Image: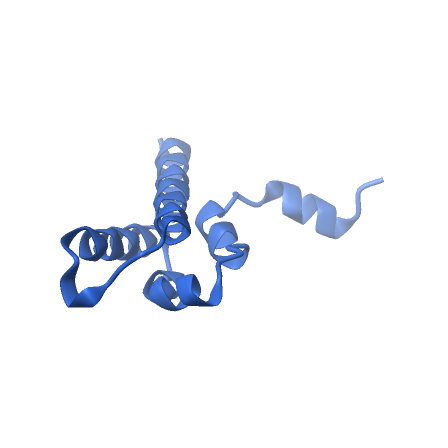
Length: 93
């Protein structure tokens, strides 16, 4: 038997980028370095912030260094946000 909340959950579109942010399991150091990306408000914003931090890490500006898990988190955030955007565009067509 499905309850009202279960039906509402089934009808909702997945918001993968928010799920990645909420369930990150990063260390304190990693959380501090990617804190800018954790404050994303939309999938587009999440992609921009992840790309900004990854670029900053590649260029080694301001002594900014990401750990492997920090880089992997930002890549996962960008991928999940891209999937959400693709799904949204497919639904509107």
